Image 1: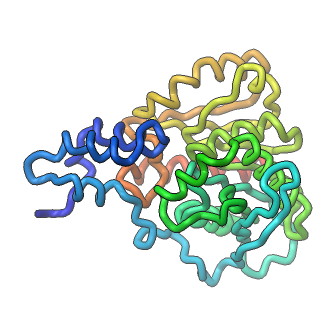
Image 2: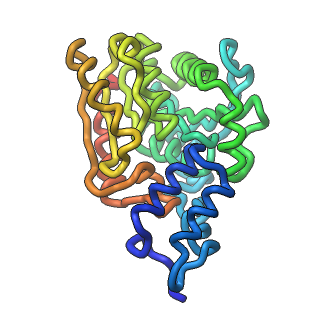
Length: 295
């Protein structure tokens, strides 16, 4: 049988995977429901294999890229999880100060895709820090299923404090000029929104398909926002109209994009939900936004 392609898979399967990936159903329920779509030449095992992230073959920037100075650091999050590990990346040979970007992972810890995004940001001329909110539990365990289970055991507001502490760490780093933005994906999109609520000196926030703050929280946003949504992501998109109403009422600077005919997670190039055209456009907009605001 030829390898599966995205166009071979029904939208219902992607929706089902989204429910599973966001802990709405457990693995056994996911496999049971997935079996309904194992027809013809498709099998449950082939569908599972197709939907599983392939990190090894999809890194855009290798960990040892000679143009980067990239390595792990730890910092303290006294209000959250204690010692937090993160990947700190900057252009190789940097001696001066650069604007900074906090890169926030999805609901499964600091996996190779998010580390890769941190390195991409550094190649674009920033100093980036990608923390692992699973650090208090031993760190990203090496696969997303276990990572999701681990992250579900942490309080999300404590994790928010861990990322705010990352902002403080980066702001005081010798190679950071103090102008810092945040980009986050999925759970990290909610964190990006909430850092715009909680951190008055944040210069810019870019939530990718992130859950929205409450109306009371949204009224406290001061940082400019670039909001990136997937048209097919009805679960997350449902919260946008109310969020937009508050942003408008409080004269918050924002730009929003809905990328047509793509799913939640479209930026993640290690999964079949990836859409290259939308991902490239969204990332180019992200970098242009940071270059404009972090100065």
